[in-house]
Length: 237
Image (cartoon, rainbow, N blue to C red; front, side, top):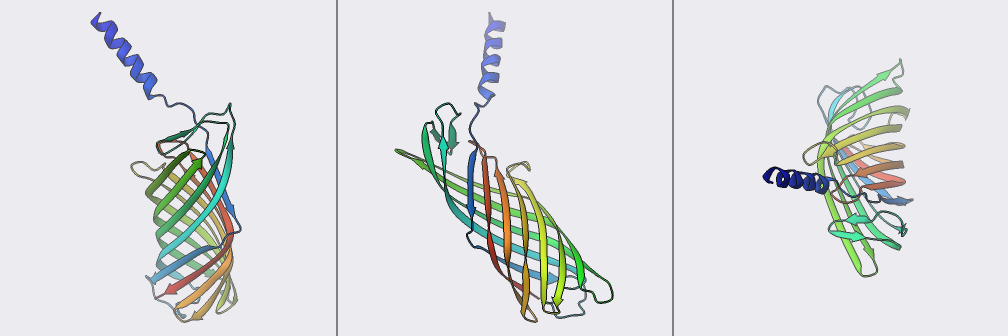
């Protein structure tokens, strides 16, 4: 009898540990301005003013922030959406407000080629911090989720100097992080734009970026996409 009771308790615990399926939260924000800022500190000798892209190694800090609103229809036969401690069952339409903040702390290496030194490649590797906040509401219901994570960040890029103080720059970045294991938030970012020096130690960047953010909280998974114009300021020491 004792063995049977132990077996039943174990079986119930296994069943309890199997999470019920949920519907993924799908949100996007397109066309909104994505502001950003960078600070770079050289770690190798420089031949040109810091605001002009050149060979060398530097420590770079990058910050980007974005927010948006969206809706999602949940059908009667679909699994529920769980945000925080609130479970939403269909049929209904959820309204979302969401925001994402991303901070990178990375080592950056650049190498230019040819006699004119116009074309260059760069690689970045280091750590990142991310925060995704989501507020969900439906008639008579409201739930919220706020996820923080830290993890690994890496990227590659290409630079073409149009003029000594003006350059076309493109980057592809990836981030993977979590509270305890590296699977809580993952991000892919593509950015292309023009950087214009404002002096020897500052430049402004303008262009276009696309972010794909995946979040794995305790409730429903979240898939967020941001895209739009980018405007950023970079300070170089």
